[in-house]
Amino acid sequence: MAVREVALIGNPVLRKVGRILEPDEIGSVGIRALVDDMIDTMHELGGIGIAAPQVGESLQLAIVEIAEESDRYPDTTAFGLTVVVNPRITVLDHTEQAFWEGCLSVPDLRGVVHRPRKIRVDYTDLSNRPQSITVDDFVATVFQHELDHLQGALFVDKVRDPTTLSTVANYQRYWLDEPGQSREI
Ligand code: NI
Image 1 (cartoon, helix red, strand yellow):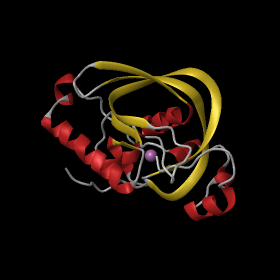
Image 2: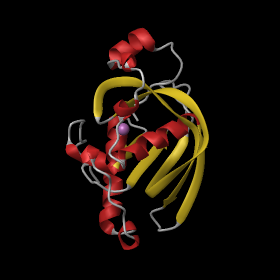
Image 3: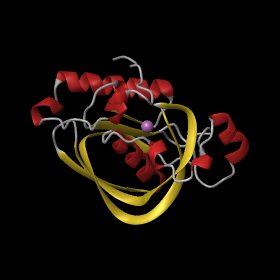
Image 4: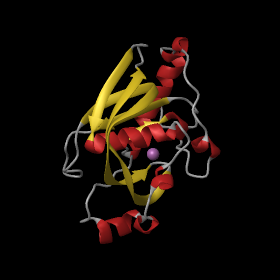
């Protein structure tokens, strides 16, 4: 297990569509080691999700983990560590919600992103079993952000109003009382 270097915006790996994993790869030693590294990297950097392209591996593989409520993030909805392989999103409620987003691959930047408020994610787990989860509210935004990485998209592509783009310091200074929450997704 190891903390990996995170690819930053401008690195072409972040703009590629990740390769679908074959069934015989999913439980392999190599993929399990990659998942361990992704978890270590996410924890080290304080993220609540990470996608394989962010550690330089162009694969359909991502992780979400939102820690229990804390003083640091008092409004956080906890969501246990979930590893998704070859995921597909189905929008269940197209009503838009807006959250402040950040990204480990886009240092020191926040912006407001509008996304559908409820989705289903169908995916394969690390034991090669099909899984399906339904998520809404902030967790739905986190999954959509992570799974965008597998399609070569970044949150900055989806910021509707570029005047919301802020450094972290300016987010805290000028925008913190605005609706939504900011996270290093
Ligand atoms: Ni991200």
